[in-house]
Amino acid sequence: MENDNLLTIRNLSVELMTARGVVHAISGVSLDIYRGNIHGLVGESGCGKSITSKSIMRLLPEGRARISGSIDFDGSKLLALSEKQMAKLRGAEISMIFQEPMTSLSPLKTARAQLEGALANHTNLSRAERRFRAENLLERVGFPRDRAKRYPFELSGGMRQRVMIAQAISCNPKLLIADEPTTALDVTIQAQILALLRDLQNEYGMSVLFVTHNFGVVSQICDRVSVMYAGNIVETAAAEELLSNPMHPYTRALIGCIPRGSGQRDRLFALPGSPPLLYEIPDACRFAPRCKYADEQCLSAPYHRTTGTHTVACHHVSADSAGGI
Image (cartoon, rainbow, N blue to C red; front, top):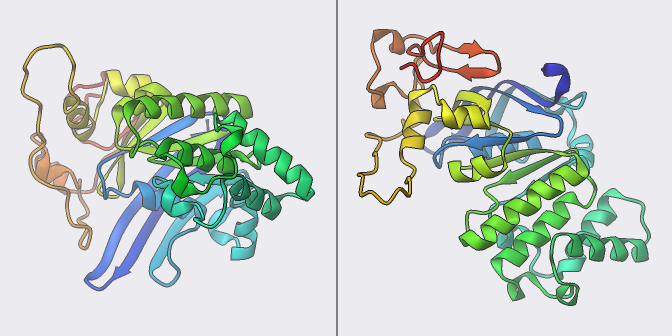
């Protein structure tokens, strides 16, 4: 289905220079985002989800990050573009919603002015046209018109996130990256934001990379999903298939940690151990020290099996059935 890809990542690795040494933040990541799909990227904090997102946007700190591999976006090789060329794509064809809008929105601009600035950077609209479009966009995301002149500190978390969403879609991007956009919101507002994102995706026909640690969110909004562990993608499949038949031990462990709400007082599953430090990376399965199925072959190079559109990095997956470990 590579011809239907809007974004194709192949063998992407990012090394970060720190005082303690080189951090291998992500290693050998490959990812396909189909046109018109919402693709979830799931994993624990520190697994490399946000680094992957910022690599696509080319927002990693210069001089402190080494990037290798390839990122192809709608015919453009992003890692080969100059900063000036990339700046034209950012906000116009690829937009991002950040986890905490209070640190991403300008404290000196009103809600409407945030959008007018984005439109001024990427369109030839007149000042009056920018104002009209900004007000319509705010209204489209459920932001009251009478609050358009308010500053971020005067808004609730949910309202600030709506401003961020309106800003991100203001130029009709082909790809929207949503980095944990509902983490700081209560469950009611979270549900509203998820429904809004799904509606906007259908309306604009854009692709979405939805970064989250929450499988509940994945089940509500995502078409496909990739699971990330310690800088590697360990499993990718259609969301419904992955949730009903997880094949990698880590994916199964994550799903096993979800409360079932059955009313029974069952003990929640706890995954033993901790993710590895990313300073020294073995040429082996990174999950092996925490996996009850690990054996000698897991200490060699990781193994990838693909069954249709379901890909898993594990030696202990049955060739003829999902969940066969």
